[in-house]
Length: 263
Image (cartoon, rainbow, N blue to C red; front, side):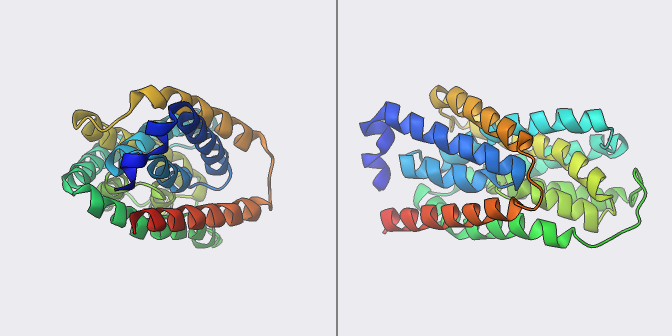
């Protein structure tokens, strides 16, 4: 497999620098349009990081950006705290089970699965704005109070996050908006809490399985924070479409490169 001749093994410093650059760009794009994992996972695989380790590594890096977003939403008082305890538990359980499932699969199958799932994550991320563009007259703080629906949403999306990941934040927002009838602001804010917990639940499984490279985690996290900082400060209104086009092109190129190396 191509990992045997990996960039990290042959030129460790250059490999780490390239991964930090990918984390920087991913952080910026995630702050503007979402979809950090769509770049981070294939970039790490291209550098020679085993697929399961790449998935675990992405969880660790993404958690930091999510935590920064949670801080901003807490200030705006947009989080629906009464649903948080149940949603957090279900998201943790779903993500842990998803990660345990993905850890069972052989690395070759995992690589092929990532190649197949990347377009799905990309579609979810890009379609979020269209699905949520419908006008509504919901009042801030109101939502459908069904605990069963909330549990199903959180455990299902949490499972997807543990099994793969990219597009999870968008999936949480779409589900809370369409199924649980949150306002767009409440859905976006509360989804960050659930997304953080699903990342954490999956991360526990990856840590227990020894599927993390802590040596490259800190510089990637630092780069991702910088990317999120500049992305959030860059006051883009309608130019989010440009970022989406760059995301499509980048994911396409990374996917073609992965397919070439696997074949």
